[in-house]
Image (cartoon, rainbow over all chains, first blue to last red; front, side, top):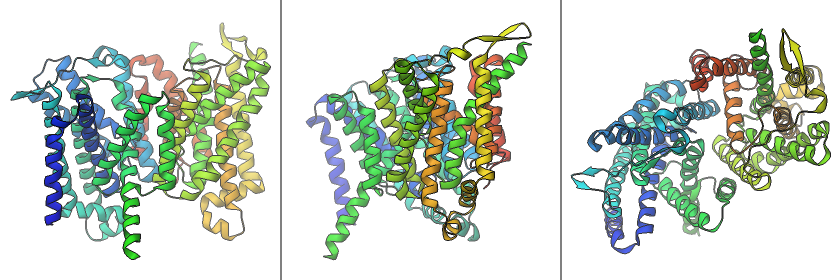
Length: 310
Length: 283
């Protein structure tokens, strides 16, 4: 336990020192990574801990982002209202989707979450008078929470704080009795039913919590880029966050965080070299599935346990 | 009379959706694989068809070559990639999504980013008179071909030896294997046939809805809605679902042009809440 808290303290110190070390470009890249770390962890609560593979998680990410964008750009609403509203409405959308999608399991669940998310994308794309359609909504200014967060350094600290607190909350959730019940449901729904657990209510709660954190990530993302377009809602986003979770390792909160960092860094690196990012990403999907089906954390554990046996 | 035209439009689009959904449904029914690459088969089929037409000028040749090439792609995907992840849906999802990206980017590379429309075959490029209004004969051809394919598939499934093996495999793959049926070969065959049907839809749909970057996603989504409505694993579900979605889409665009997607998705949500496995699906 002492080694654990030492590692955490060290991590906090490193992250706090980054603005003094990194050039601005890499600092804003780190901000982006942190946002996607939160997004990937939120999805892992659903996939890794509850056993529900969603292919529509961008709906909550993008919806939260759009609420912030619309309130700030169209409504000139204060950030004290816009950010909570973004998270709250993404959570509400999560509740609605959960009611519809939880009637199904497995492949049907994947298909339904994908189809529902695509409806939200369709609205953002089609309703030009409100959302600006394909052109998106530019001019989402950075918020001021007591201090102005307009510059990269202070915004980085704000994101670090939000993502850090969310990560703590997620760790607390998966370690709570509720989190253990979720893992029980992942392993066997019928057994948990027989034990007297209300399986549907647990899955519903996990879905909604997951949507809430994804929504928060989306709000931060839109504040970060100062711009929102239907891209944030697209199924490619949903798939990207899914590969982050799986590349890192399903069912560990650390894994998706590593997966998010790897994918964002790879994207940054590859798109500076070639236009063919999508092709590379596709190959990454295939190679990951073939050679690391349990993710990087799984690979590391295999390696570790093999060494110990020797 | 205008309503007859609208209905025919809806039916011809529905038939196109049936061609897409039939493969998706068959693949799921036998292997429980949700194939996200299915829209790409349509896209690649349409592109290859356009190249064949551009070089040979023959629509018939496009209808033969494109589906065969894409069927081979499907067979390779099943044999060498999906095979090892039998009944493991997360890796299957990732693999098929990976191939979706790979096909999309390669198509963009080879055929460019401008949407294309395939030319109609010369014999069916004119219109006939329906109650004083001109109607393109090509759409009627599409309906005819689609119904013919449906009939062939039905005959294949219900009346042939391989069809019986297929039905046995859908019911219980393990028992079928124990009975001496080569389920492994059946898997590859069904995957190839599914890809073939989607590519056929790509060539046939090319003159009507065309193809371009993003078509793969649009088409995949529509095929999903069809199988959600009709039920996975059922040919009848794919046909009925295709027609329902085709008509809903067509009339939705007429009555609510701003919210065309809703006329498809609201009925989908309603059906889902009463029959989670679709109209003809099995749990």
